[in-house]
Image (cartoon, rainbow, N blue to C red):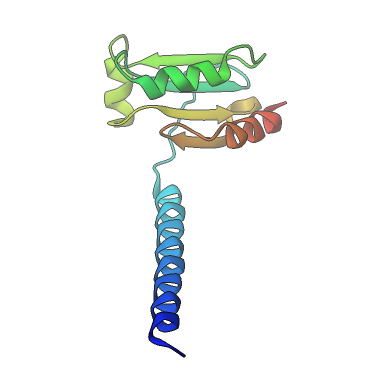
Length: 125
């Protein structure tokens, strides 16, 4: 194999390894995420979104949910700081999708992918 071929093989290998490491880190981070207990914040199936007023991603999450028939409960840090303190929420947005009886279907930190959010909402009904 020529020097050029070796270089290309090394670059491709390093790229694949970097992508695998990034995927693994994201996967492990999502598994370590603290599962929030949102019982008492919403009655029945729906979505609880923790937001702050100056957060563009928070507005984007709410926009994703706009027009959806599901009940959305927005918990604003400025209006309900005691809830943020009780649940130890430091970053926003956090979106929690719950089914009947308060059973958590999904939880997203940051701006969720629209397809992932829609998939979780379908599970609610």
